[in-house]
Image (cartoon, chains in turn blue, purple, red):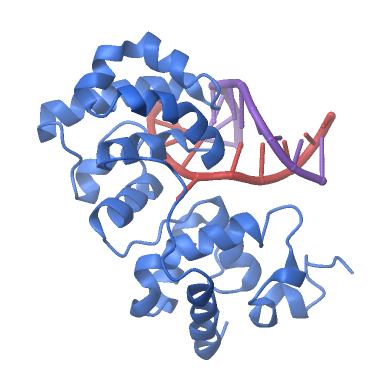
Length: 215
DNA sequence: ATCCCGAGGG
DNA sequence: CCCTCTGGAT
């Protein structure tokens, strides 16, 4: 995608959502971290359904440890990969207390040293909780970046590096949310809603007999 | 490359 | 039924 089109692309998404936010419910950075860990290969709606009652009681790592592995497992049983995630949440909580006084660290190295936290999760926490202009590449961002031609790449690492290059600084802080929300509601994996897409004229898959119409 | 793994949509 | 969902660890 050309530079001028990239600017137009984000200007339109910004006009549509001036202050985009993630949809994972949380009251503090710790709950955010847990919610993002739980969101791996799961929908936000599904995560929220489980964390709503959980977070009503648990707001700190100490309270999570008090609940215990059994309690956490039971609480998140409706989310995919729940056994691994429950273990990670308990161990991650223990490490936050041991290494960071119970607080969520604001640097990538410390975040990625926690179980269940990889580059994508660290980028989301850094962006939302600490205002760092990271662009986390999840399934939506990866798909939208490739399909539109905004930042093509075969791996999430390649796409993230490409986004860092092509996304103007003015859009970087919110680029992640604009892309993910666009991907979730319009540029969907199965049946992209191109007729209602406000950047369809800039999209690489629209003009070339792409995956839009299939024609 | 493979495993983990439930809910929702089509 | 199959695919997708804000991936990470082995």
